[in-house]
Image 1 (spheres, helix red, strand yellow):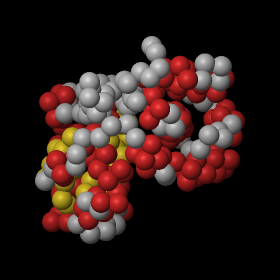
Image 2: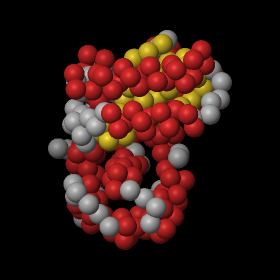
Image 3: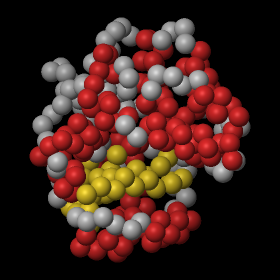
Length: 247
């Protein structure tokens, strides 16, 4: 692999959206359908549209190991208490996914021209609409861009602080720790992807590109070791997080 890799882009340099309704594996269709029904029941007419992203949207999910990742657009701000309570009950019935993540936003925010690098890119290139009006068609195709990467990384410093506190207090699960390792890898990759003219979607691809640009950086090896381990101590993850200085 040579620099720039241009991985995840077409011949014209535009980012390829790897998600599709046709890619959803049969094992996950039931939990997906019930989750949409749940969202309808909780939010009613306030629900505008639902978008699928992540491994289930790409058709690469693993039963019992993958998350169900959804972006949910609503007309007005919502209280998620009931949604999260019902989601916990749903997960007890559907062990094929380990958790359900909701990224909830307002329609007017998603359509705000000032949010095009954040919401526009996200809906157009990382999601597939599975319910309601598809807003992704309102945005143009985009190429890897530093403004997009910065928008996608903007919440990372806040998340980093929160997870460090959880690790110190011992109030964090293995699933949350593994999710944070993946988030660290993606955040680091997004600091160089515009230079690489790429948009790698998987952890494996992101790690490969990081090794290409930082061949002597030991942090890559430590992150890679943690992401494939069945367990990790709080101290191990905290030590890795404390080494982060590229944010």
